[in-house]
Image 1 (cartoon, rainbow over the protein chains, first blue to last red):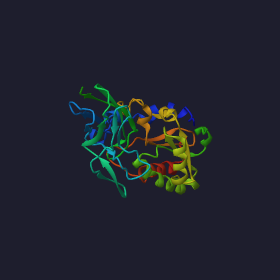
Image 2 (image 1 turned 90 degrees about the vertical axis):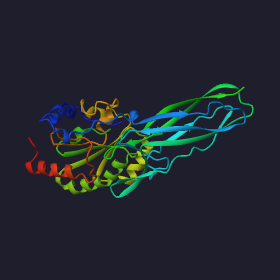
Image 3 (image 1 turned 60 degrees about the vertical axis):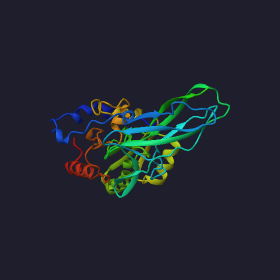
Image 4 (image 1 turned 45 degrees about the vertical axis):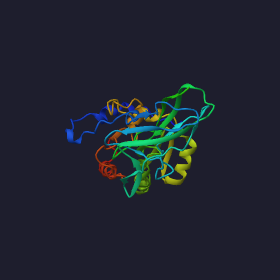
Length: 166
Length: 144
């Protein structure tokens, strides 16, 4: 890992002193990366062995922010993804995402999501699945930006519960 | 390991980036132009990648970062955190986020002469403001 000389840090106070900026020129206070997207999961009330169903994962993206779509415009960018872990008795299908919205950045338009995004995650309950309540563990990944700057990528846990009927 | 002390005697433009950041990616090409334009005027351009996989960054740097730019890798974000102003964007628990995509100009004595946090109202990938400020500083001399 590289190191940088500490002398620069000592001089930060000088660099930041000075007259108050008018409100119109002050930088907007930004959300922490983890706060940009709120996720909720809707599940069928009851499922039975052999049933097909889906989880509806709703991502609410804070106003003024966007995240890269599930198929970003560059391989360098970090895709928004919802993934549920493999577990006995449940087979996951491919999640479906809405169409992206274009965000104009310099000379290109990149594929993003804004506002409310619904991700449909299909599943199938095995015929020999254990009855009772099942906890489904997943992950949400995204990387958000405002119209002028970007925030660190986020990876966090998702949890859903379903009732497999007896 | 690179120490900024090694650049004493030169002006330094220091910029923090990551390959996954679309805004940063748009800036990188122009940072190479800045490095080329000011190389003969004793200005070094240092680009610090913050907190991503080393192999990924090395591949990115090979393909996208001009050879005139000193490309560095800050695996943990610790180097970036040392520069994060304590009161900037207090909602950022990871202080490396507060410095991310910022640009500094250091004079030949190693003093910070310009500190540009990401502009929340405008985006200019060409570093026009940095160049303008640097031109003024170079015209005034070393700032002793």
